[in-house]
Amino acid sequence: MKLKHKLVISYVLVVMIPVLIIGVGVTYYFRQQAMDQAIQQAENNVERIKNQTMTLLRVPMDISNLLLFNNEIKEIANTKFESMLELTRSYRSFTLFNDYLQQYRELYGIRFFSFNPTLVNNYEFIPVDPQIENALWFQKAMKSTSIGWFFIPNSDDYPADTLSLVRGVQFPEYQRRGVLMVLIDRDVLNNMLSQEPFHTMIVDSQGYIVAAKDTKLVGSTFESLHMGVDLRSQRKGLIEANVYDEPSNIIVDEMIPSSSMNGFQIVSIFSKESIVSNAKHISQIGMLFIILVLLFAMALVYVISLLTTNRLLRLSRQFNRLALGDLKVVSQVDGNDEIGQLSRQFNHMVSSINGLMEQVVETSEQNNRLAIAQKEIKLKMMASQINPHFLFNALESIRMKAHIKGEAEIANIVRLLGKLIRKNLEIGSGKTTIKAEMEMVRSYLQIQKFRYEDRLDFELTIKEGIEKEKIPPLIIQPLVENAIVHGLENQEDGVRVEVSLYEENDLIHFTVRDNGAGIHPERLKEVVASITGSDEQEKSRIGLRNVHQRLTLSYGEKHGLIISSESSKGTTVHFTIPKGGSK
Image (cartoon, rainbow, N blue to C red; front, side, top):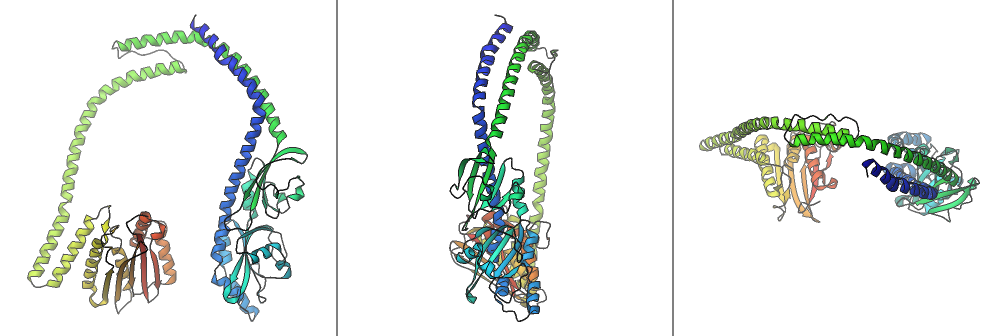
């Protein structure tokens, strides 16, 4: 048989008949598959909304944890104010709630409900009245230490109309309790659902709709929609029901945040008819398209088979010429199909062979130049090693000269300086021992003692058994240098620097303490921010920042620097590393 006949018969047996059979089967099952896909999509959307909501709820949860033991709140909630002027001053000085609202767009408001009768409702601190005391959310919060999530309707005394976090706050020393409320911005919740393909809503444990794709439903109860579904009996899964007189599927999932007394349900609703009608329409269009394509393709197979044979024969003759050694052969077979691409690749291959032959000569020359450059680098590296040796030899000559002339103290300081410089030059990317690091610190302190004389005193304390532990190099000396430089500022009586190392609970504790000028509280906040922030924040704390970053990168965030200081009383820098060097 000719090639064109083989292609047509093969196409009919292998492609046309199987595709028609499969098309009929696909059309038959397409409806159920479309329904399954819609259900799966709805379940995925619900799971995604669940994760996004959990992420959003972490903000009010974290803020409530921070406010739970806040002293300013405790003082205002339990102080018996003698006059309105005193109360007004306290309110004006309290800006913590407003600071959080400015910082987090997820929040709508923060309120604290207190039994203090001397308070006045300023929409932040609200005295408890009978209406509030009888509210379900207030009673739940007062009876439990867990977090509660409730939709709080609007009130003249405290406008809300949004989802809120409520939790009881205890004041044991006053034998009182209060309730903290963190309101979530309803627009943020609704925006999460605005792009959903199906009708989606979030319902709280009381049945209130706290967020929905249709924002008009927010604040109403799920029962008021008359969908014939009781969410309390179906906490999670797939429900089939008539929604607005249309057969529909309802996907329900439950979400309970950690440390919470109640949670939410995420509901996604879509009509079966909309899915089925689309499936029917797509099935009909698909079958018609398949039949037309198959008929058109069969005609193309016959025509293309005629052209393909001639072009393949022409390209085969060009390959034979190349096999005989003709590197100037050029294929004239054109076209944008695979044969045309093969022809162009054939021409590119011939061109590449000629180019590679030229590159062999160039590569040889480049290798020679590279070898010469490497030798020059080695010479420069050897020359760069002369300078440190020259420096050490010069320092040793100075020390011996001072020693011969009886200047023992100067000779010792020069020896310590040479030792300190040598240690710094020898430090690489590896680790050193505590013993070696402390020897460097001692040398540095003795040099500074020579400089400041009686204005500097120091003490090094190392518990036995930890001298051989491995630590990053230059991790203590910058802290000691900081203590001396900043501790002596405006200090006529000098400063005392204490460095202590000890082991406790499989951790090695490092403490550098001085009794110098100390740091003002506002400046201390800036210093802590500078060592943990970005590089552009501050350049004057490079030593502390370098030490903090190396500690956190090597051992984790909890092993970074802890700085405490009091103005005119001194500064203490403390950090820990795991024994054995593991995180």
